[in-house]
Length: 588
Image 1 (cartoon, rainbow, N blue to C red):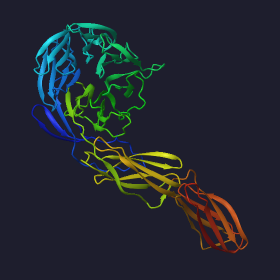
Image 2 (cartoon, rainbow, N blue to C red):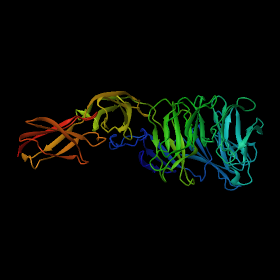
Image 3 (cartoon, helix red, strand yellow):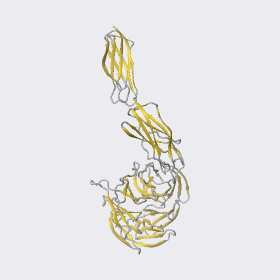
Image 4 (cartoon, rainbow, N blue to C red):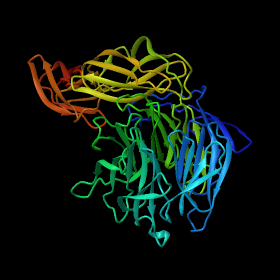
C-alpha cells in the first residue's frame, strides 16, 4: 500500500479503489548536521488516483483509446503454446467494461489512427476488434510468434515483430523480424531484424521507433527511428550506446516520443532516463534529473498535450516508483511522486506500463508485485491548473550576531494560492560568501507557511542566503528571496587562577582554562605568557593548552612585591583573541 504519498480511501464494488493523494514534493534530500529543519507533515486535499486490480497473471501490453475513453491491458500468458489470451478493457474511471478472450496467447496491442480498430498480437496472426462493439473483425496474417509480439500503428500500417523459438528459454536471444501489414490483410517482411524481443513505438509524423533489449547476443543493443510514411520503413537515425570499453550499453525497458516527435525518452535500467534528439538520437542538450536513489527505470511516457513526462521505476519502500514532471527538462518544477507498496497498489511500475490519454488529463499506470504475478491499473489525474506562490514578510535570522562555526537560523514564510498541498512543500537554500556559493539542500515548509534554514557559516564577512521555491505541478515557482548576514569571529576566552601570595623560594603556580567557541581549532592553542614586576616586563615560555582546554604555569619570581602575569592568545581567522591577567604578592 502507498504509505508515504496519501491516505487510502474506501473501496468500491467491481475491484476499483479510489485514493486521495497528491505526492507533489521535491525529491527528499538527506539532511546532514548543520543542515535544514524538517516540519511535521500536514494533511490536505489530494489529487485523484483510481486503482483497479487486473484479472491477469502476466502482462504484455497497454494501449489507450482516447476517442472512446477505453484502456486495453493484455495478458501475455506465454507459458504454453496453446494458452488462450486475455485483453481486459476499462473505461477512464477505472471500471472494467469487458474482457476479450483470444484463441491463443496475446502479446502486443495497437490502435489505428481514429481508434476504431484494436489490433491484438496473437501466436498465429494479428487479431482485429471493433472498438465500439468489441466484436472480432477479419484477422491479419502474420508470421508465427512463440515469444510475444510488439506492435505499433504508424504511417497507416500495423507493424509487428515476429520472434520464433523452439523453446521459451530461447526467446530472449532468438532472431526477431520486423514485419508490417498490407491492405489485403497479408504481411510483408521489412528486412529489418536482430536478436531478442525487439520493442516498437509509434510517434507523430509517421515515425516508428524500434529498440533492442539487452541480451547475450546483443551486448550493445541499438535504438532506431524510422520514417514509416512510405511503402517500406526507412531508418532515419540509429544508435548504440556502449563506449570503446563496452561500458554504457543500453538496458532498454521502455521508450516514447515527445508530443511533437522531436525528442525520445528512454527508460534505461542502467542509466535512468535518457533524453535524445529524434533526428540523430544524440543526447539532448538538457536532460532530466536522475531518478531517486534506489529506483531503476522501467517505463516512460509523454502526455499527448506536451505538458508532462511520466517516469516509472522499480523501487522498494518509500522510494518513489512513479514521477510526473514537466515535459520540458529545463523546467525545475518539482514532480508528483507515487510510492507503491503492497497488496493494494503493487510494488513497482511494470516495464512499458505507462500510457496517457491524448489530452493529458489522465495517466494510466500498470503496477506489479515483486514476484510479477499480480497486476494493478492506476488512473492518475494530474492537477489541471497551477496557482501562484510567493515569499512574504521579512526574512530574519538568529542569533542577531552570526559568528563563524556556530549555528545560524534563517527564517521566512511562503504563501500559496489555490489548494493546499497533500504533503509539506520544500524550499531550497544556498549561501554565497567569499568562497563561492554553497548548496544547503531543502527545508520543509510548515502548515502555516513558515520555514527555517539552519546553517553554520564558516567564513567571516558577508554571507547572502538565497531561498527558492521551485514550484510543483499545482503551484508555480516563487521569486527567490535573499537575506544578507554579517558573520563575525567566534569568541575566545581565558580564565586564569593565581594565588594571592607566593614566595621567591617556592615559586608561583598558576592554572587556567582556554575556551574557543565556534569552529574547533585545527591545533591546540599556544598561549603567550608575560611577567611584569618592579624590574620590568619580560616574556616567559609559551604554554600549550591541553585537550580539555586547561593549562598550568610555574615560575620562580626574580624579585619581591607585586608581580603580574598576563596570558594571551592572538586569535585566528575565525576567532577573536583573548587575554587574562593575575597579580601575585611575592615575598622572600
